[in-house]
Length: 219
Length: 219
DNA sequence: ATTACAATTTAGTTTAGACTAAATTTTATT
DNA sequence: AATAAAATTTAGTCTAAACTAAATTGTAAT
Image (cartoon, rainbow over all chains, first blue to last red):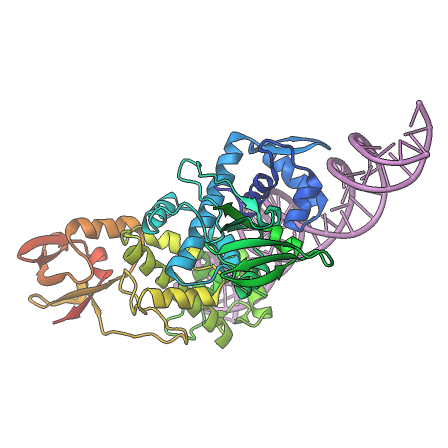
């Protein structure tokens, strides 16, 4: 009774878009996230509701049942563990792994994923700083804030990035921004609104949009 | 223009069933191997011929083109490399890996597979003793013969097993037959036709069918 | 050379998942 | 409260890949 790839991807999308948890997610939001049509989403929501992975009300949207949450969380777990493997064992870079993990996360085998977890040393975070749910679906939340929210002279460590877009990640790498990078906020350029930060005495500019996707733990 | 899983599985089946290479493979043989109907196979053969992965003649069967051979060989490469990973890195047993590798082989990424190959130390054989094609599709053939062909008092090393059926492999493990096992032929039981062999002084019986699927390098 | 049987193909359905266009419901605005 | 706009659903199609049943072709046996 395995789910299809499409069904799994819908559940994952609903989990991703549910914040706060249990929030009803709209048809259009799912369609936008999965780059598909609203009509296709409606069809799938009916099917997933039939199978009791979601609660669905016409014209109101959908939210995951416990069962649906469990499945979506395990997909996230698998995705992130595979990303760790690709970077830590195979030596790939953080911009190369998301797309491959999108495929690997659908491999069906509990034994496999538990062995992989053990092989990797039970990592708690993936290469983008996202927490990895354990076999029970629990994960560590850390207090973090977007770089764009720092006040001048505040400083911290980059602990996560939002957005898996490879060109965004390569952009950060080029600028010297990685997980663990120590970064100090200098302020906002009055004229062009770019954000001025420094990394190891070196000044650089980031757009607001970029800075919003970099997460910092203050020190 | 990636192939679908189904298309890939058909190409792999045709490669598996083509011996000698370039032999026309019959519709029914493919249907039996893939456990599907002959009608479905006919449909797919037309599609694969259209895309020039096979040569197909109505009522005569199919054979792979160079392009088709290349793709099927890369699937075998991926399948066997993943099997090595599952056994060597994750500590799975040889009866657990085939089914998972059937899924993993479809993951699309040349970079991934080259990194995996390197990570594993460029293995030449998988956990069942089957040769692993290199990135150019070349692989090592070893001279080997079925255990059932040994004459009394001949001895050798188990270097491969045919058949990925987990219960067959577990049966061998229980009897103490693994890759590298030193085995001596004692003869055939005149009454029940079972094959008598010894492993490290210990005698055991194998059915002819089992012995045919164990491959030996004479010493 | 017929004929019977086996192998294969064709024809017609089915299911999953997508699509577009049209209809309906919700929401936002006056 | 009425209506325009936005969101969502319904209706009808399409493609991939499977199926069964019927028709066709190939092969083996008399």
